[in-house]
Each structure stands twice: as structure tokens, then as C-alpha cells.
Length: 328
Image (cartoon, rainbow, N blue to C red; front, side):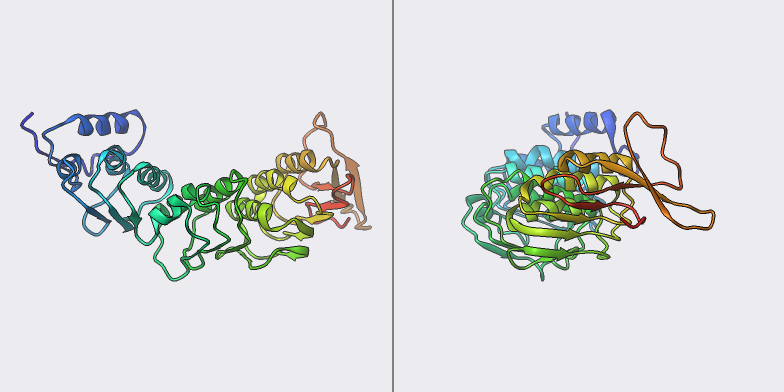
């Protein structure tokens, strides 16, 4: 009970049951003043109005985030948080962001206008010149389903990690009433309501970026008839995300995803979404270089390394889908 300061940095307790037991013990220690440079006493007693988290002052990891996540929603005096220089990433950034969303007193999380987003009073947000860490990007993702009046979002320059792009994509996909029309990020720019053809081939889209693109097109791509994503190595994870978004593109007739590292699992997800058949294509390596095809069934033997999964025409929505580098 007399323990007031605890420092566990260097203990290598970073995840799993041991981490959660440590967090629970810290939160239950009523006399504790400081834990790894986190002012737990002041936060617990409601003596802080602003909190700045910086990795230059002290390393902020999973344990510190777990403690903060337990204290922030309960604090009624804390109104401002700055975590832009915390260095948090991945699940730790998402955990802190969730705690901030749950707080009723925090109205600003630099540089996000938290209160306005929660109250759904904004129609556009330009963060292209702001300093955004993964915590702020995760927080924005969690707020998107609430901010249904937003028509324009610009997060260019944020160097958004693939995990945060996917998080935003999942949030937008679950926001049926969103009025979004324009979305700009480092991965792509949608600056108009899309009709006709959209070419995003060879733009470096990863799986998270494709998930976000699919959700943005849900709101902006009603008139999209042709989509080219070729030569972006987003793999099966991106194909699965894309498959979920295709249902919102009623006019889509042609999809090309050539050389995107999509294997059978991704091909099956797309074929199910598009009611299309999968074909396996390969070239004869014995001189003629002629492309060959065979229809693929799940019960087939494993695909040969020389074979490439393809899908060819085949539904009332899509007339041609190319996944490999064998010409259709």
C-alpha cells in the first residue's frame, strides 16, 4: 500500500496474460502515483486537463497504453490529449484510440477536432499538413461511422500504415449513411464522383489501401464501369477486401487485377462475389509459348507453380476478370 512509484521498463513484458495482469495490478493500486512516467495518480484523481505523450520523455509501450486505456475513459477533467509523438503503432495505437473515443470529457486529440467529429458537425476535414501518428489515424477510423456528414477527407502526407488504411476501410464500409464524395491519401486520390473507367494500376497499393479504396468506392463509385488495379501486389488479403466492396458497384463491368500476387484463396473470394468461374492459365514452355486454360474446382489437385489463377467473363456484372499474367 505504501508503493507510490513503479518502473517496469526493460522487463520485456509486452503482450499476453502477463501484460494484462500487470495492467490490472497498476489500475488497482490506489496509492500509486507514477507508473513508467505515466502520472496515474493525477489521472485517477482527475487532476489533469491535458496529457502529452512523447517517446522522447519515456518509452511508451503496451503496458503504458493498457494503463492509460483504463484511466482515460474514467477521467472527467481531461479535455486534451497529444499523442502525435508517442511513437505508438499497431494494436497499441488502436487501443489508445478506442479509449479516447470512449472518453466523454476529451474534446481534442491533436490535431483532430474530436468534439466536432463526434457531434457530426463537420462536412470536410483537411489533415494534409498535420502531424498524424498511428494513434490519430486509428482514432479517425473509429470516428468515421459517427461523422456521416463528411463529404471530403484529405490525409495526404500521413504515411499511413497498411493496418490503419484497412481500419479506415472497415469503418467506412460499415457506415451506410456516409455522404463521402472525395477522399485523398498517399495511396490514391478520389477527387470526384467516379463514372466510367478508373485506372489505379502500378500505384503501389497494398492490401490495406485496397480495403480502403473498396470502401471509398462504395460511396463514390456508383457509376464505375471499369476498374484496373493491375501490378499492385496486394495479394489474397487485398482480394478478400475487394470482394466485400464489389457488391456496392452496380455498374461495374470489367475488373483487371493482373500480377497482384493473388492466389487461389483470393481468386475464390472474388469469384464468389462476382459469380464468376476460376480458370487456371499457363504458357507452354516447350517452344510454342501458347496460353492454355483449364477450369478450376476446389477438389482439383494443387496448382502447379507454372499455373496462374485467372477468372474470365461470366456474370451479369463482370465480363472479364484477369488475375494473372497469362493473356485472356
